[in-house]
Structure formats: structure tokens, C-alpha cells
Image (cartoon, rainbow, N blue to C red; front, top):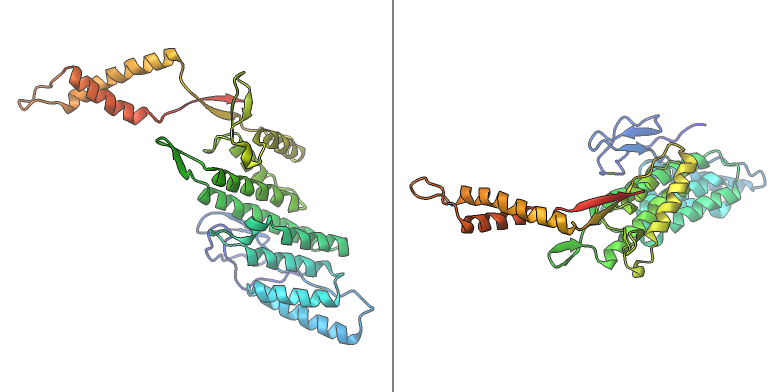
Length: 330
């Protein structure tokens, strides 16, 4: 099966120009080190013998234009000519696959909000499903689905890393608004969708979601209830059962990777009374040393006293007050 080579390729992760991709299915970006699965236009072959000569000529013309447009990265024109070709013969799977590829690139942007996030990539999945329905024996479907699915997962993970940040404070502690948590949930769902799109399953993006739902990044999705059992932490308004979703995804991953070991759930826990007492004593002890270092007399003699210890304690407390104690659960 021949491949239609691209005339240019940019990294899905950082946008840098990529070289040395010709004839390869995947390539590593020299700039950011990301492994890219190359999304090439699919070769379209006319097999319908019942088309009139006029329609065959029209279809050949549409196919030639759309493939040239896609090779050059002009996905808007490629999309338009996919539609024109499908009006002539909707039974060709490669046309639907090319339309899905054009839709992916039309809707995506590296850092800004994009239509894929807002529409759950419905266009892409609709066109890939149309390929399966109209041409179940398409020779190009698996490659199209795998490359689109992988790159959708890759760029969604990038968006998660860049965009999901604390956006409000509870007292002096940075935390996440309901809107930000809903956005994180949306990215989780897109990474899960990327897995389902792929014909040859790659679990790495599901594994990232499980890692996040295990509180291993920054969001506290789960916490302990009054019986010290793992329970939901985020508000019900988010519409996300993080505990159940984590369990479901772990089971899915294990079906495809029997050696997968899920991360433990990381839960921040306040120190007990005994631990706090030891911490306070330690703070005063270290604070005294800090205070002595700060308060030095004009004759070079250190001034030691309650004041220096208290000042030192306050400085030391300010350094360590945000440190957390964590416990881990399966």
C-alpha cells in the first residue's frame, strides 16, 4: 500500500517543525523530545464500477485536489473536497478517514481552547464510524484511527499540563474552582476517548488519568471519610465520580496490559496531636538557632533570648507551614 507523503510536519506537542519523517510511521521531535505518530492523508481508490464516466472523472478530480491539499497541510480545503467527493461516492472508507483527519487539524490548536474540547471530538468519531459502516474492509482505517487517537491523547495531555492550575484561594491556600475541575474532567474524558478511537490500543493516556485520579498530581479528587475509607472529595456539581472512574480505567488498562500496577492513592492528612507537639518543639529549637544567627550585637556577640527564639520560630514556621503529610491507599 503506497503512502501519500506530507510536504511539511509540525510537532503535535510543541508546534516545532519536524524533519526526517519521510517514510516513517513515527518520529521524535528534536525540539521537545515528543514521540509523534504521523497523520498522513489516506490514499483513495475508486472501486465502484457503477459510477458513470462523468462521475468517475469528477471523483478523480476531487480526490486529486483533496490529497494535494492535505499533503500541504491545507486541511480546510481538504475537508471541503472530501465533502464533494463523498457526494459522488460515500462508500469509500478512505474519504471518511481523510475527512476525520482534516476535522482533527481544523479543530485543534496547541494552547488555546478548541472545538475538540468543546464538542467532545464528535465530528472525528462520527467520520471514523462512517468509514467502518460504509467500508468495513478499509485497508487504511486502523492507521487513521491509531494516528488520530494517539495525537488527540497527546495534545489533550499537553492542554491538561498547561491549563489545569489552581485558580482560587481558600484562605491562603491555592485551590481549584468548580469550573477548573470540570475542565480537568473534560480533558480526562478526551484522553479516554483517544484510547477508544485507537484500533491498536495504547494505554498511556488512560494511565495518566488514573495517576491524576490517584491524587498524584495536584488535584485532590479523593479523600478519607469519617471511617477512614477512600471517598469522593470534589463537589457533586462536577458530575464526576472520581473513585468509580479510577476503578473502571484500571480494569480497562489491565485487560490490555496485564503487568500494569496502578499508583496508590495519595491523600494529604493533618498531623496528629503528638506529631504537632513534636513539630512545635522542633520549630522553637530551630527557631532559636535562626534567631541567634539574625540577632547579633554590634560587638560581634550573639544576643540569645526569648525574642530571638520567637522571631526565629515565626521564620521557620513560615518556611514549613505548607508542608503536608501524606498517606497512601491501594
